[in-house]
Length: 428
Image (tube, rainbow, N blue to C red; front, top):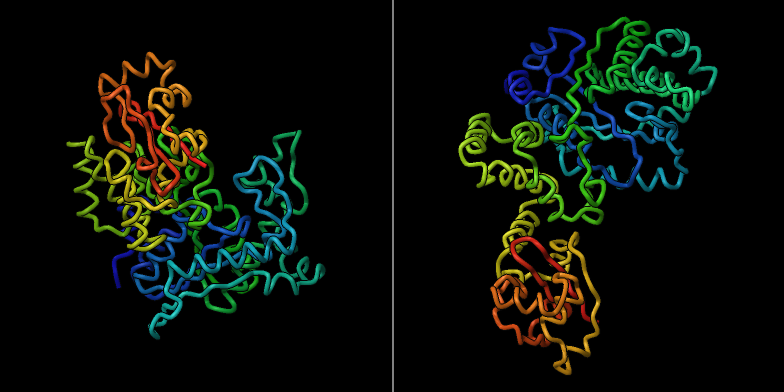
């Protein structure tokens, strides 16, 4: 069995442990461990990726991972990390979300296992929470915890200090429901370890206490640091919003670019968190960032590893091809979907295709219309100086007229001024 504890330490993945002997246990007997994912959307996002990777690390080390989809707790909502009450999901929305999450988790974990005993399990806590009666829950779980204990938890305390918000009884009960999850998984599968982010510490320790009180057995918890961007803001957001693992929401190219754009200050951390590269490979990339930051070797390796993990090698190759085409003439070879992915954040303008057909669309006119240049005279000067590109080909003729031969995917033209000012022209 691999030295898992040493690997987790190297990667900075141990934030808190409920027992100092847990590291020895990680390198010893086979453990069953779980991490939960609440179905607040029909896709996981990169904010979930750390815990998914941790379950994968455990399985590769010979342990048995359980991925828990919170079909039951999803009706309630976790107050952890939230400053206000979540919107409760309808039953229909919840089932749609669960279906999407189930399919994604199966990409990362081996649910067959080849009879090794480390086959992953995928469970839905609605299966045991929905049949619970109120009186049964109060007697079996509620009586073991005081309100004083519960309000002392950070996830609750942070809400109580805000007089304008507070916390509903519904969300207040979340930690007891999660504790019951741990108890059920202990009973059903011998699960004795729960993984989560540092904001889950209070919920995890509540479950451990419940197992100790009700079953008189020991269980453990391990939390990882919260993942932040270089500026200290929440990880998992791009300029256009949440970065999802579903390619229908966030394309492989966009996922690739999200990680490729990682700041030098955090790329070493992300390489440790989100890849399965060896320690020596990561140290080599650390050195490359210090010695040749302009090459972005670490960012490229990070983006390639994560995109391959989420979407596979062929989609990663497409994403890299698109990234290479951004500044080269290869842009002409991109299919429409990839072309739109590459220029999704660029401003765009719609132009009548008839102006191409009758030969009336001068490049300097289009530069002024798209506001890449402030006027036609300014556009002529910039073209003459070699500062304008059509489909990434430098143009030096101020009298240049665009034709249908310039179209990409039969309906687009990419204009560029200088190195980074792009504009996508859509003809129709």
